[in-house]
Structure formats: structure tokens, C-alpha cells
Length: 226
Image 1 (cartoon, rainbow, N blue to C red):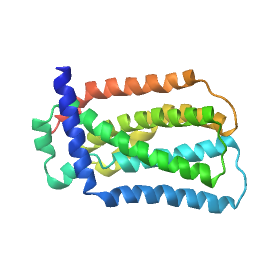
Image 2: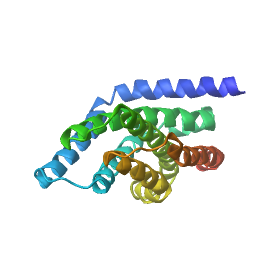
Image 3: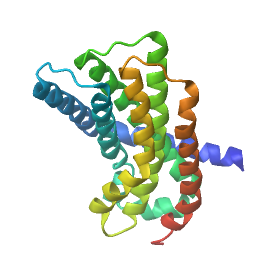
Image 4: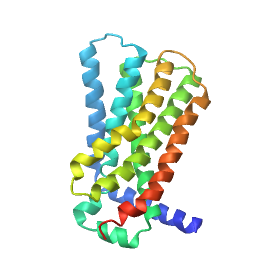
């Protein structure tokens, strides 16, 4: 059973990667979103130095909206081609959810890493080796939670008539604990402080809760329109 689900998850992930390769413009749009936002913030500041808390809030705001742009496209191909009902019939719910979640995580992690390197360069943030490791670990754990919740919410909004408005409304309150916890850790690191690896435990636990709840509710959401 586990092997079968894993195999189907990998199949869905491969399908998403192949489909995503045909939509390079979408990924470039996400990159330009990050570059434009960072450039605008940098130009408005005109060399002024922000405190670490404000920098951290700006950084995770960019990551949040990048997540919205990236995961919002997870079911777009099926919606455009009209094959979403076929996917509901022939695709195992667990495989569809976690296959698309993995793809969304890969996409968001790549975009987040790109954004973080630009952010560090734009605002001249200095890291030691230990703080850099903690910063990127925090980034990956946070991105995992955003991708997990985002994939489920996109499926939920895809099954309703209010597709464009429902996703962002639900995304913020569900991901707010991740954003607050991750931003607090990032603020400490930007300020030159030290954060223990154990401080990631609440975020990781919340990610696991999101994954379990999403897997339980996804069956009802996915088969609602069949």
C-alpha cells in the first residue's frame, strides 16, 4: 500500500514537472515578482537601514505572496484542458495531493532560495556559517508548510465557483502561524543573534498537522463534484 502510494505520488510529481516545463513563462513571472518587489523596497529605502524585525517581515511577506503565485497554478493545467474530472476518477487522492504538494514545494523552495540570495545582497546582511545554515533550514521548513497548505486550498478553491477569491482569503489565516514563527527566527538571525535548531520544532509540527489534516479532508474536497 505504501509502495503503491509512493509510486503514484512520483508519477504525479513527474507529470507536474513535465507540464511545468511547458509553462516557463509562469516561472519567469514568479521570478520577476520577487525581483520587482525587492527592487521597489530597496529604491524606496534609498540606503536607509531597517531594523531586523521590519526586514524579516518584508522578507516573509515576499515569500508568502510568492507561495500564492506558485501554488495557485497547481491545478491550472487540468482546469484549462478540462481533464480535472479524469484526474479525480483515475488519480488516487493521496497521490494527487502529495504529488502536487511536492511539486509546489520544489517550485517554492527554488523561488525562495533565489529571493533570499537577492534579499541578502540588496540589504547587505552578514551571516556566519551557523546562522546561514539556520536561516536556510528555517526557509525550507516554512516553505514546506506553505506548499502543503497551498496545495490543499487550491484544490478546495478549484472545486468551488468562487475560484479567484477563495484561495487568498483562506491562505493567510492558515499559514499565519508559520509566517509568525519563521519571521521571529529570521529577525533574530538578521540581528546577528543565535537560534537553536529546536526553535524549528513548532513549525515542523505545524507542517505535519497540516499534512495530516489535508490528507484526511482531501478525499471529500476532491470527489465533491463527481
